[in-house]
Image 1 (cartoon, rainbow, N blue to C red):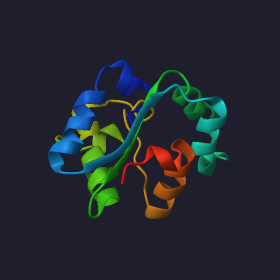
Image 2 (image 1 turned 180 degrees about the vertical axis):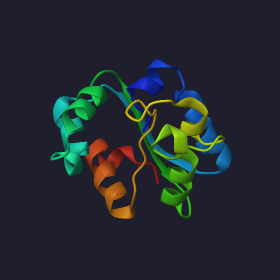
Image 3 (image 1 turned 90 degrees about the horizontal axis):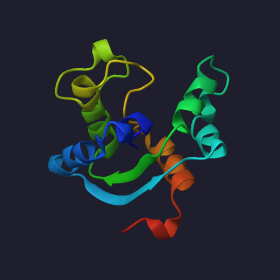
Image 4 (image 1 turned 30 degrees about the horizontal axis):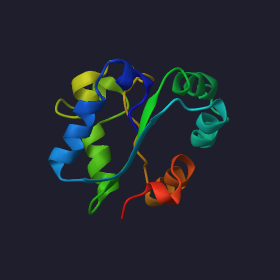
Length: 132
C-alpha cells in the first residue's frame, strides 16, 4: 500500500513502477480514502501500543493506494524492496532508503507474512476485485 504521504508526494507511480520492473504481477489496485474503522482494523495488531492512535490518524489523513502483488516469494521480495522501517536502517535502493526520513511517514506498507497478507487483502478488497 502507498500510504497518504506517498500519495501526497506523488510517489505512487514510482513505487508501482519499481514493483512492476522487478517482475511482480499486479493483481488488484485501488485508490481510496480509508475510513477510521478500516484503518483501525488494518492496524488492530498494534491496538495496545502507544503509537496506535497516531498511526490510525495518519492513515486516514488522505488517500492511499491499496495493491495486491503476486510472485514467487512475493512477501519477501516486497519487504526487501520496501526497506527497513527505521530510516537510518533503510538501505539506498529501497523505497524507504531512497525517499523517507521519518518512521511514521514511511510511504508504504507491506504485509509481513502470508497469513497477514490474506487478512489484509480480505480487508481491503472484495474477491471480485482480484484479477486471477
